Length: 269
Image (tube, rainbow, N blue to C red; front, side, top):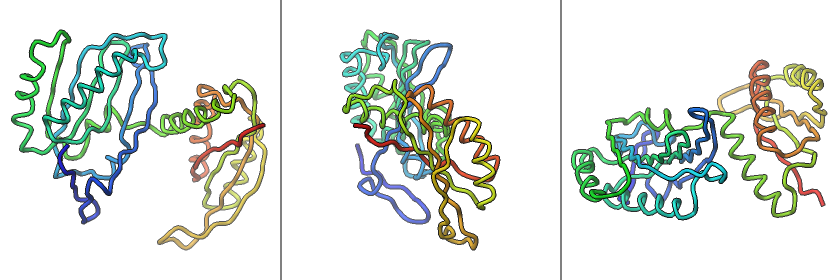
């Protein structure tokens, strides 16, 4: 890849200053699963005048729906090889990919310099000529990252789901597969103590238990303090169940002008 620089807040951010941070989540598309991986840190570079062109590279893959990854290890290795080849030829930044079960395809998304846009499609067509897989490429001028947001960027529930999956992966190393109820703490931020406690009163019907509320210093540029509320619930650390819980908490906290921050759970010996 080439050296990555971009204007952010009036200054330059170099490649070494902006590490990739991939969020992985699943969704249903065309009544079949799709797995998405998105570099969340790329959003902080937008609008992007250095890498303003979006390349979306799509090819066939062999889907195996019984696998959590939708594709086999050999298919994943092939996709990784293609990603490296594309990166080598366009000098851009890889920002994510999607494996789409309903169409049996994978798409790879890159952002590249405008000077490379005119030649990249022709160059890649020559590289993949004769490939036994159907390949499609599309390049659009997109300094605002509209393609990135449309196809890759997760919503709030999907971000929570990705974080939950990382926690469950750690729990499994301690023998917890997420099927047994465990204490899970949930953290929120509200503009007033009254809003926080009114929010809590609604969650009681769902089995949430009050732990504490703490006044925090006002955010920069603001005068009034914020209130951090901690609730707890005994619940299996099941990804699908937590997805519904997260959706409920996100919507309810917004109703009272608050923010659902995060959840955590300790290792249960």
